[in-house]
Image (cartoon, rainbow over all chains, first blue to last red; front, top):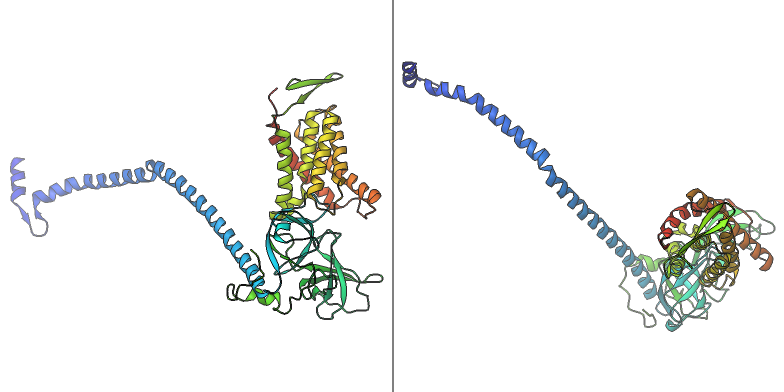
Length: 282
Length: 177
């Protein structure tokens, strides 16, 4: 046996070196291979099973971070939306610099369904009085029905006791528009003979001496023949169910907002490009 | 007066609950604030009448008609005050006074702790409350008001469901018996 080993040490093959090496490698390599596979399996098991304890913790931490980031994202989106709304309000005010107005935040709504009112964070100390008009850049909101020192209540256009002097923008037919306690308004006194089209714009007529002329009230959403007047339902231009900031017109006398341009123009132009108005508060 | 005691109505024993100090006031104010705040952000929340649910809950729990009546009156008048000048003071006041009295009277005769009973009673009281408001508006204020519509039925169901969970929350305000 020893001689065989010595022979193996001496015998040299052209391609694979000495025979002893061939034998050794041949004998050891299966174990190395098995060890390597075994180690790989063990490593895989460790990484993908036992190490998952940390992964679970990491996962939980990442989830928490994700939740936090989602919350921050939602807050930022809210702030961005608020900034957009305020920019529109600012732009509107700047484009109507000659009209005294003040922006106010909606802080509450009616505590019951018997009336449709909102509460503003500004009142008499800011110059708000009863019967002042309340609008957004989109359109008419309602009028101030009560003013306290630091708050005021606004009767929404959709309330049953609310109304605004209005007219159809194309045909110039005048008729008051009133609330019904529902999302849609009712245009009350348009005779059956008059032609009214679906989608026609309804604007303020200025006849109520609260709102200036040509402010958007809504669009005609439904027309039914009635006796003796048509039943015309109007979808409000302002989103009265999602009001967050509004503009109070600080005047008890009719004001002319046409001079400074249409509200729609005001929304489309970039904020901050106009000069600050001298009469605007806040 | 003990924290809780039994009313003996024939064979049945009905427990009268007392609440932690200030619990009724805080719950009432919170209900009014949420009632006037929530619809700004969630328009559908206007279907809820949290002040009514609070009136019903405390009426059913205290089981004392005088307390229920006075609490209903106070909550109703506060709700009237927050509803703007187009709502005459007393509209909700009258309705909630009657509901507070009825809830206390029924609470003194029935065990109203079971969720199903709470759901049914709240839905019933909600319809009765709206009925009183309609009667008040039609007779005293001469205002046209529909008697019944699907919105009322849905609102009654929603308020009944919310009441089941809200009442469980309010149960935590009770003093341990």
